[in-house]
Length: 335
Image 1 (spheres, helix red, strand yellow):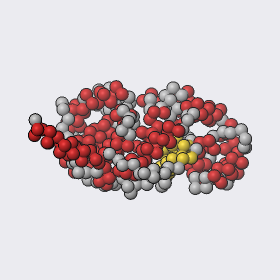
Image 2: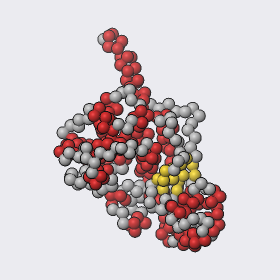
Image 3: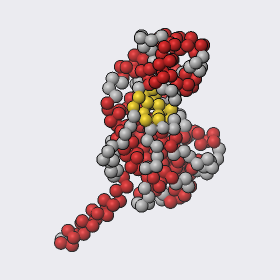
Image 4: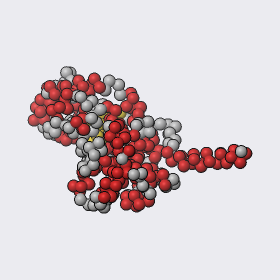
């Protein structure tokens, strides 16, 4: 008994050393994040007409103004006379007014979002010290992008998270599996996924299916450490029952790709079947979520990190030898 008591501190010490790489130490000065509310300036207001609002946006957001009108709203250069005409129509559009009202109804308090983003980027700076910590701009991205990632800021499209039953989504003809993710609870996981993919892009030479799988697994593994208080299915953007089905059938999913000899294919059409949006995974039971390669990649990278206790997240994200990560992961799901 005395021997056990003697060994226990050393066991605890060893365990704590292993977990240290996942225990961020906050900056005592705090990570400084700048927040802006661009959507309030883009969307309809009663106090300014179109020319005044364009000038106001140009003065307030000099680096973003051209992109806002040319690329986000898509109506032309802000200095163009026709742009004033088109923007006046935009401001008067009943659909845009409906969207504005819905945003104001859903996002009544940004305190929790600011707090959460600040905590996330505090961890982010600790895990990957050389990475850029962006400012966060709550934006209107014209129903095109959940996030627009620029060099030093991320534009978060609030209109993409108005709830799956928002009537305005009907006209966009989005399928139900897309609308299921248009909920406020996924705003932070999805926008962070987009930011991570921009900051840690895939190596261009990586063209096989397994390289794509492992790359996406790295992104999700990092996301899981940035969002430890979220449920696992939210990292993936899967409905909870679909995620649980994938977990239960992990061995079958892995076996499917082995049987079809897809791991080393360079066929982009085949790769996209399992990495891009879909109602379910092609060739698998309909309960299997689309983008199932993300799930498989996460499990492979998770296994790799468990068997490489000295590897930090920073080292993981800088490692572009995806085939080697797979080979060294010792990943063998239960059948």
